[in-house]
Length: 142
Image 1 (cartoon, rainbow, N blue to C red):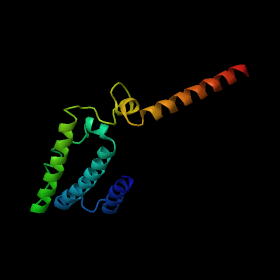
Image 2: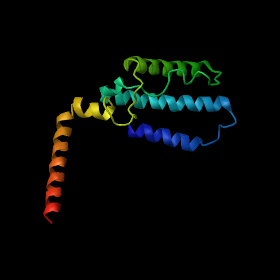
Image 3: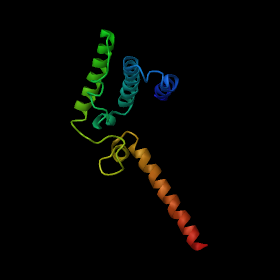
Image 4: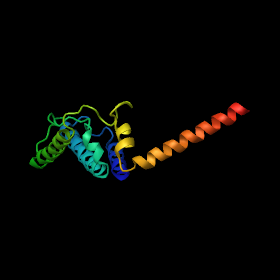
């Protein structure tokens, strides 16, 4: 996944503002970025199925206003749209994304309590709490 994020960053950096005055080329660039995002999101949701419960934060109609002329690009947009619609269906209309502030039902809280790593995380949490309590006791004794 980090490789895909790096590809997105490199692509955007390379393109820069080259397409600012060309709506059709800018549209193709946005399709390419979204295809990379879809690949990254698909891998992430495969690794962490809990992510599917959260809204992807991107509306499925986000690419509707692009200026595209080639059938190939229309098909690319439709594939992205279908993926996003599937993600929205999987989260059952939840408006909560993984970027919401920490709180009840946020991704971090649920991952901590429900994931395959939860016992490891809870053990680590207990070790941190114990170490902090010991450090506080030592400090009070000083």
